[in-house]
Length: 428
Figure (cartoon, rainbow, N blue to C red):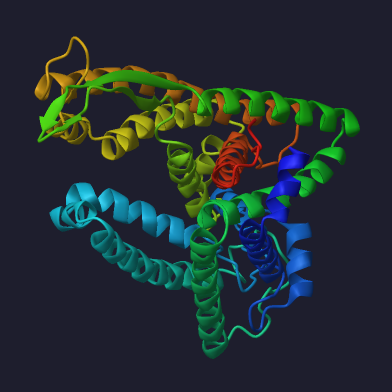
């Protein structure tokens, strides 16, 4: 691996891409420590020591590398861009025009990207308005000082404008990495934010009753989950495909054998994020209500990650969203039509509708395995942290899946570019 890394930095073009990627990631990390206008960084530190926040905000703060609860310029991070991308992708099922643009190739993709950018700006304005509006009231529960001392309307509007501009800059940085760097820009920025929160987590665990013994347990758990994630994420079901021979003029086409790779976890980490967001919303709503009212107390009791009812609902939602998202992203009819168009068929299965039904049947069986895998990986950290009595740890299975998945994909991208230059890659 170190030999391949040296070869990568000795290659001028690849070295420029790697240095550009690391430079952008550094800028992103520095931006999370720059406070928005009229935000008192001193008061923010006091609030972080005195209070907690809703689970949804804590999770978003982790993805933003800690910038959200610091009310920094990059407070929203890359999350509005990701949310907009998911919404545009889901809209392909609802709006026929979006599906037509998706099928138009590069021109349609460029138009969908433009829509994604506009939606990102809209979501940034909306989210930053909410964050700034509740900064002095409900964002930090139990805080005795104001994060924004002078919270006039003009100051709030300027803070919203700067946070929105920061999100636009983060979106541009992600696209710079994707186009001119190594790997996927959105994924790498999320990777940066999550990895930056890992030392803080270990510090929190070391201060618990078990001390460094608990740290050893948590690290061991993460290593075990990492092995499972690598094994499952690299696993796939190969559907054999045979192409018939075609004679065009004096040339013969087809007659080859290949396969359709169906990943066990086709939905990736999206179901876990959806399930976490939905279950975190009731508790977040409870922060805006009267602490003495019965419905707020009921939400605080039943919608916390230490509750058995919460964990069961969490697992069921992950399974549901796994099937839902897979059914949207995986289109067996389209695959069947493409195979039929080029003379391909699955041995023993007739072309056309029977092929689509067979692919759907196989995908449903695989999705059950992937959904249960996601539910188990997401719940194990909750159970372990609950058993150890660590109440403030939000670094869970979702984070490990993202870290391992992004790391594997980035290594594959570097390896592919090394192979093009006849070097021995990372995965050799």
